[in-house]
Length: 445
Image (tube, rainbow, N blue to C red; front, side, top):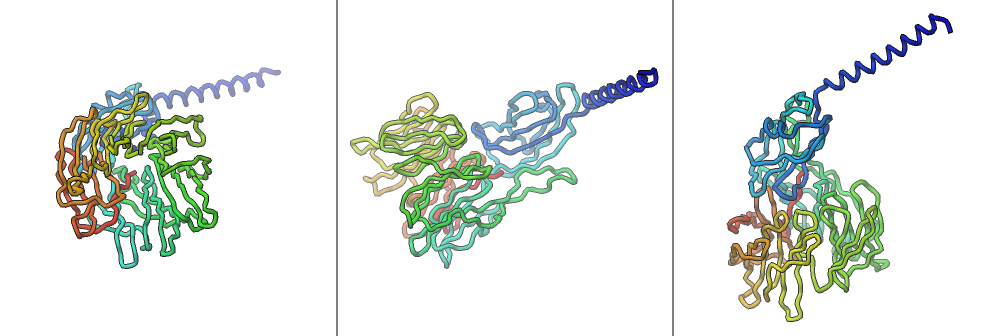
């Protein structure tokens, strides 16, 4: 090898090292970037944002420099490149929020300031009677109602996907034949405000009905979770055997070989399903998860889930015809919150069960509904008789943490049902002037 060749090799190696060093220098001095911002369902407050950065950030700097308008109490959680902005519990969101995001990374390099508009409030859905049957409608932020589907003879079941990406429907024709549908929904409730960015907030817009059933069904029970997964229990008219199908949000479908004595419910956080069986309520894992089976014996029904993982409210049936409401927490036996002879119509809870609402019907008092507010130990904090009202049979009670409101579908005597919003703190009611057969929340995303 002559000197010229050696010189060229050394020059090439040196140039490569210099280029690598320059690239490393540039990367080290590049300011941090916001890689992803996602509105997520909060379990301990009204709303939360998950943030991912290109560089590890100083959490204290973000907390000090970022601003939320209207101002609200909040916390920053996490470390490194993945952080969470969590609104403190008990606050009410009545309008979209503006987030001004500022801060420095762990090298003291500043993040380019950004402004985001964010509206975590859910939307009100309703099954509305029409001249041709029933139609699914939604109330927009300005109070107007819009149809999302054609009219069907009967909308037997309506279940919003837990991530707000769609709505599962079961329809019934005049021949007692069910069909299963999925209505994808496009919505944007988190948008960057700078020029050339994502644009303004957009309410839910239907993307066209998709049929999920190849055959006419005898019935269909539907459940979803916060991941947007879907579980369907159904039986075809031709075969008559029940089939349970799991539809993951990422696509595909799996038939589950689980037998149940009633409707199954997906765990809100994903990974499992609650199955009523003869020996009690049974927790099964879903495909892709470590296999497990846990049984809670006794005559119990799942009443509602709490936002925090593993918390739920159960109704227990006693041999003397009394009923009790129980709070279930991970690793703990069920805790009795209420016991009585009244009928349990519905329940709801906040966070991990710190506040619980129970709707009762007293058979000995003319079936007048009474709403109780309980704490986590079962102490009655408030009670209010809903004089002149009746709950529409089979409809749930749901809690909206962003506005601190309960939602019920109720009717006055000899009148049509309507949505009724109830202040969770005072238990005062606010009926909406809308004739409906069902009112539920659609999560924002």
